[in-house]
Amino acid sequence: MTTGPDVPRGSLIGRFTLPTVTHAPRQARGRLTALLQDLGMDAELVTIAVLLTSELVTNAVLHGRGEPTVEVRASDGHVWVGIQDPDSRLPYTQPTDSGALGGRGLQIVDALAHTWGTTPITGDGKSVWFTLPRQPEL
Image 1 (cartoon, rainbow, N blue to C red):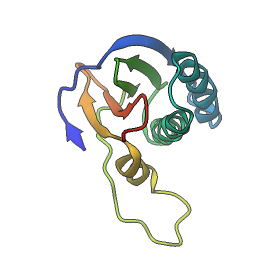
Image 2: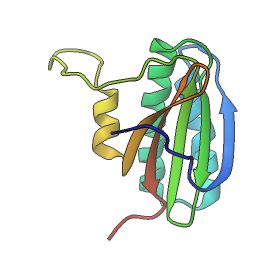
Image 3: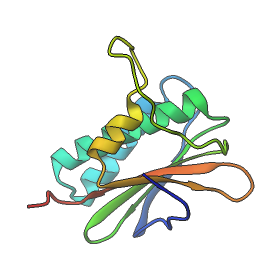
Image 4: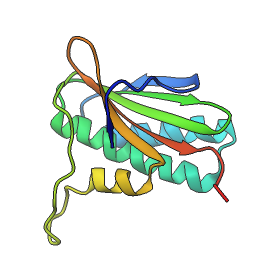
């Protein structure tokens, strides 16, 4: 994980704000899937991006303060997805009990993202972001 100023990479593809409700991750999955499919991103990587976004939106809804905003950017080689919320507390991975029902979201992000990290937002808040290649790496 990277902590610090990471400038969003690529051209803005989409940006949307979600309500702080339990179905926000589902809304994010639907909207992100459409954006990435329109971009022509590899189907397996779309699935991974949607999973990672769902995990980060869930964290923002459960642990943040306020409505999360999803921003999607693309360059020739990568897609950058950031989830912003108005809570300055940074997320961290923690050990989980094998019987626990939750607590693995950031471990999933760490395992599947090309890169990921957090960036503080001036005032109050943060962006938790990840990158993925647009096409499978050989």
